[in-house]
Length: 181
Image (cartoon, rainbow, N blue to C red; front, side, top):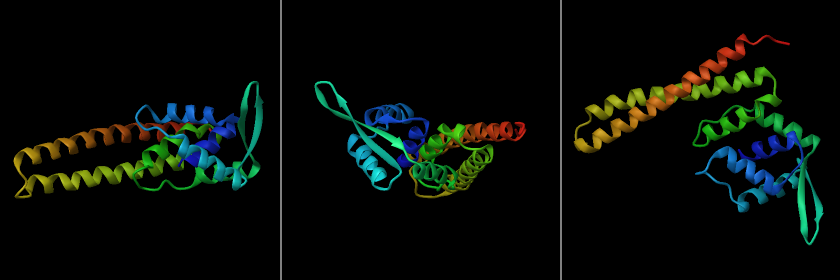
């Protein structure tokens, strides 16, 4: 997931590691941060895989800064990650956000496929909630205060999921109406 983000940012242009970390922190929000201990080993793996290059830039009075740039193999890997199906799991929302962030670098068909895959995930989640909610209502032995809170949690999840479904559906419709150039 972070590989997609790094390769996508470098497809826009070369960056220093601290720039990538700043952009990533800004993108994922204030509560989910990426540490240098996660980012820099990833960068080393990407260099080792030949997806990016690293160049030291001398600094006046300090140690050199590392500047990273995408290779042709990295461009191919970025495109491969952008076209890969979304995996249903705990990070699907963040992976979707990363892909959405780089929609301008892939053709509309890839954008549409990604949106439709995420819509499918959301619909599965909505169905899961709809099936589980009556079971919680009917299950004996759940203390009433607990049942009330679980049902409130389901209500919240349902509202958030419905809002996302609405937004994604609008994006799909917008893309389908967009003239092909």
